[in-house]
Length: 128
Length: 379
Image (cartoon, rainbow over all chains, first blue to last red; front, side, top):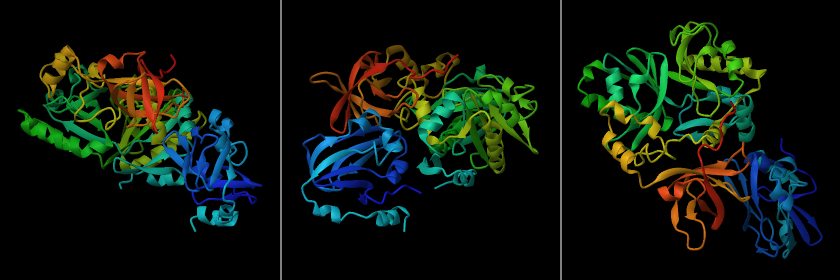
């Protein structure tokens, strides 16, 4: 069973969100990394880019396919994680820690409330 | 979708299944990278039952096949096989295949899953047009036969435990590991027999086994047990594709189709122009003499970039570079850790060292043409 930490919010498209004041850290879930399999390349948004919730903003490539990653929230990118660019397998090994994708300054913090909680996300990935 | 006799075994192993050529097949069991590296370093077991088998028998089987296929069948003694191609009148590839001479008047063709129908139709049409047609029999045995591939540097260490004893037909050997590259022989299995050849599609040493479909699951389980101590892992089509790409083996529908000739695809070695008349020969002879307008080239990415994928557009490097073609196969190479691919390019651009740019999601990433293959096994 995939790991779904209690202290995070989730998007239906399998990104997680960790909120700290008006900044959110975004990555992909353990379930998502397992489904994507061995991540061999990650492309992240540039710092300064303005995103709306739902925008395709990153790409994760496994051996077999390329998959778009969608921003769960709106705002401005303030940091991208160079470590996952240098070592894409971090996404598989530590999806919630060293394998984070980017930090975003929230332009509409109310969006966070509309994301899934851990129990709702668990239900979604259990196929219920 | 069709399922192979090993479908229940794949499910038990927790395989991830995909559609391939009309079949529901395992793409991976644990990880493409792990399975790929298992084959390069130890051993992997593949279900290749989706592939087709055609038996061609009779007094005129040899001249018929030599007229229909590009390689020279005259070089095969009973118990030997060769890679070959079947071309249309324009020299385009109907299929690429392995042909084994099981006995003097008995040949086994191993054909691509996606081409079974097209091949059988084409072979039947060629047979009807062949002078000695009454002396040739064709049987599409794809339904009643299944197949496995056992591949990797450790396979020779446990193949005799998989298929015990001396061979009973084909190349006569006292044990399976004595078979040499491209040799084929039958071995007892329960009350039946299994054909075993020393061939593969991975660039490693290995064997392929063809057996009646009802036996396949028992053979699969037995081979997995026999190879376990040697690092044998079940491997899916994902690894099969990355392994063959690293050694630049063509995959029908990517490097080969009815509008591409073996000469353009760099497979002239398997076209025996000196053997006499055969289907497609005039076009192939002309291309070999005068050259072609496109050539299959191998390239690798030079900067850190996303891996190339089939369909990506290729440009010549630099300002105002011309559009040269498109990627036909591409992946991240698990052995080399870089993006690799193949593409048909104008002959001038297909030379090793030519700088290219691959268009990936609207941006261009640098690449360079390299000699084939990307990977060569040690020794």
